[in-house]
Image (cartoon, rainbow, N blue to C red; front, side):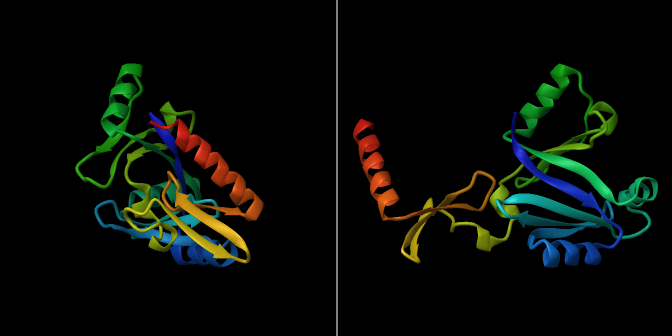
Length: 194
């Protein structure tokens, strides 16, 4: 059901102060972001090192659902998001197990979600979401659409970039000896294919 943890979301009062802290001090890379005027909050996804993700959410005004959260609990972790292959399958599994959920939103092609309340998940607000993770991070961290890998040479090392299942790329570096070994292993594996 769950493919991976996608991100942890932090609720803050002052978005700009938090953004500066996490980008300037920790080097997080901003990706997708926006505002939800219906629920009254802004959100920003950041990529971290190995393409882990982190989200900052902040209220747009006093009527935001986040205002009550921040007033009662203060700034801190708001929820954790698990990426799922199929939100409808997640619904079926939760219903089968008798676990209540809320906020099912499956009206968009690019994002489908639902939540489990903290009282039903050991104190943690859980979001399940179905989406293409490459869409939600900075384009510069992804390969071009249709590109499976990219090969470059720098400082006498061959760099092989491949798609990361969470969006972005994984960079493997090979010296000459490692590259020869890789070629031999690939050639041997190719012979086993029909």
